[in-house]
Image 1 (cartoon, rainbow, N blue to C red):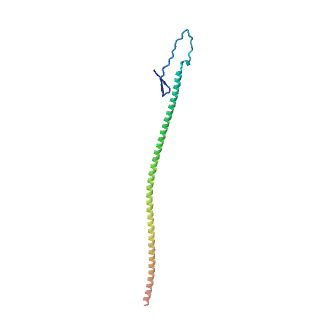
Image 2: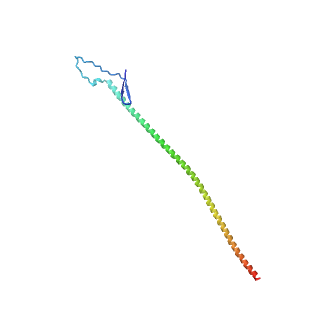
Image 3: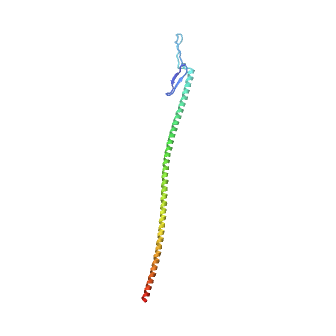
Length: 169
């Protein structure tokens, strides 16, 4: 049995394994009337069921091809979504690394600034202590100066009294 190959679609070939149908034509005898042959005379029930099966298989193949096409496009779309998600995550990772680097720099700067502020406070406290100490020394010197002036005035009185006493003698 030799099968016929039929192109159902561009990408699908179907080979049938049915025996070829032959139409035997006998020449009309003069005694018989010439009958007109119709298209329905050429087809048999086997042909009809074969064509029906072929149509059924064609429909099944079409639906399967559509399903495969849908699945392929869905896989392609999911791949694209995964690639976009991967790129998004990589970008966020880079941004996170940049922010972490900036945070480390900021923390270092804050530490340096705190150290400088503490040093300035210590210098300020030292300056305040120096001012207080200088103020105390100034007050001490002023009180000694006043005391020395009072002693000098008392000594001057005594010198004057001594001169008066010597002048009387």
